[in-house]
Length: 152
Image (tube, rainbow, N blue to C red; front, top):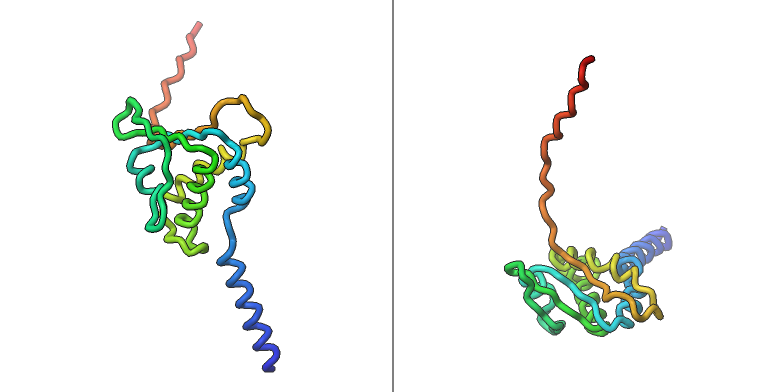
């Protein structure tokens, strides 16, 4: 009976540790791909950039350029800066990694991940990878009336 309880406790501990160490799928591969780019552009609100690039221990730097749209900036990161940013976002966004579950960090990570996943190492000379984080509310419009069939 004691052995069974001990084994159950060990199994539960392993399950809990496994859950705490899980990283987003393909995160390590994303870091390898990100490391090789010379530039990566992010267009988002200045607030989004400022609030996701800093933690109490470090700040990701990037070349920030205002756009023609008020409050929106384009940030250009080098590969190493992108690696740092993805790592920071991962730690902020995912509570199972000790982060706060920050919704801004999660939104940014989820926007970056698919574009970083498309990077092909060794394919120099292509366009600079980029994302635009500018969600809009979809408007619904009434369907146009269909033309009436003409009577003959």
